[in-house]
Image (cartoon, rainbow, N blue to C red; front, top):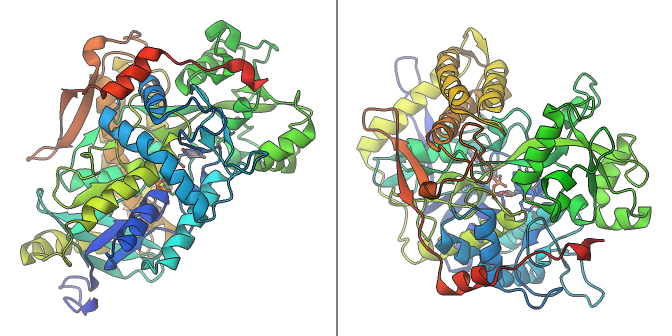
Length: 598
Ligand SMILES: Cc1cc2nc3c(=O)[nH]c(=O)nc-3n(C[C@H](O)[C@H](O)[C@H](O)COP(=O)(O)OP(=O)(O)OC[C@H]3O[C@@H](n4cnc5c(N)ncnc54)[C@H](O)[C@@H]3O)c2cc1C
């Protein structure tokens, strides 16, 4: 139901807005949002609305290339969900929530079969089975893939399935605030990015599936207008807790380019898939040394992402990098037909840029790829705010201190099902949005949005946007220390002043969207800096040069929430223990068989 609210039509009154009543609002239409909506529809909940900032079918998920994990045991029958869980905990340096890891790993064989039934074009074995390959730091071949366009194929499949089930969808809507009294969720507000209309959603249940926060760093693998921290910031503002935000995965291989060359500059930081290393790619420094021999003689290029990223950062810092601040990744010992078949998109991309991977190496450098932290949720994906769920890349808990490649696509569909099932079991019509929340939260926010539109401020939105990204890179990058993190927090305060005085276009302009995102980025950035400063140890993706060792006392998660009087307040909690099945798998001590790669 949509009502045009005529609350105000002149300057002295509130801006007008449309009201939409719906039982479940799903904010985000990537794999996580789509899978939740499918689960709800299959369980008979049809009063659902899925929103996304882009056109239907166009979400960040489409950028995932390499694959999705699930212990199907097709190539390696001895694999099992418990060993998958053990690998995930090992890679997460035991900071993951074991229960959430088990939720994902136990479900994944079924989720992969289901995607297959729904038409996903998985690459196949000679026998026509779903093919599975190695990904870094995994014990067995359990990464299923669709060429090197796995995310695109997956989202196409999920969107088609959602359309088959007639799931209602509205595209190009940006949510700017959740409606909450701090304990109970009542809906959300936002705007239509095409028309500029303000929108009020009355919904007793909101599922935040709005992606992560890696794009708050200046060299990153996401699109500039996604992964800016919308999900975590919206939840935090509504009273939910953020968890482990300091853990940001720097993918070892982003494109290292000449940033003064306009043809290459847009490619800076873009992901060069791990699958190249999975297929046998080797890393060399500018002196022609296969330098991983020094850092990880057994695991070499397939060691964990944090280990490889730090190794490259060190090579570059010590003067053995390329002119563009990277190293070489070489797969030219494989023949062209193999590369074309296994890595078609990568091959084409470099070919278009004039580099033939079959005869020469490509240049790579670390790039911010994934935020392991996010919104703290329970076993069903629900936050501490009743009715607010957070899933997919927005949630925290599955990946711990470092994420296994192929596990985040897995998390999206696994938690989509868990959250959908939970919601379907208790939803009973649209919420009863209290007048106090409309008058006390929604309408003042609409007034703020109206004031932001067309604001003639002193600072360019994109300048402040990139200032935040630079600050994160400089102060909370691959190598961190207490002094620099504190300086980063101080500098962030200065940026808040600038963010309050932005020069912004109308509601339908990109600058308006980015101005809203600047607010989200500030929240995410503060949580990253505070978490990294508090965690006086090194673990997984978080490396403190002034606390270089892992401290067993820090096997704790760090939480931040909004204090009653404003400002971020934090606490820590110990991590719980895994089930006996997973502990047994851990005790078995599985290791990768690297010889399979050659
Ligand atoms: C280059 C790249 C390659 C990757 N490769 C792999 C891989 O091979 N395997 C793997 O497991 N993982 C991979 N990942 C990670 C994986 O792609 C993501 O974690 C996953 O797709 C996230 O899905 P999601 O549904 O949670 O969020 P997304 O796909 O990011 O979707 C978020 C949705 O929320 C919407 N949204 C955001 N903010 C708002 C707002 N304020 N209002 C309204 N809507 C909003 C967006 O429009 C979008 O619809 C890769 C990531 C990158 C960057």
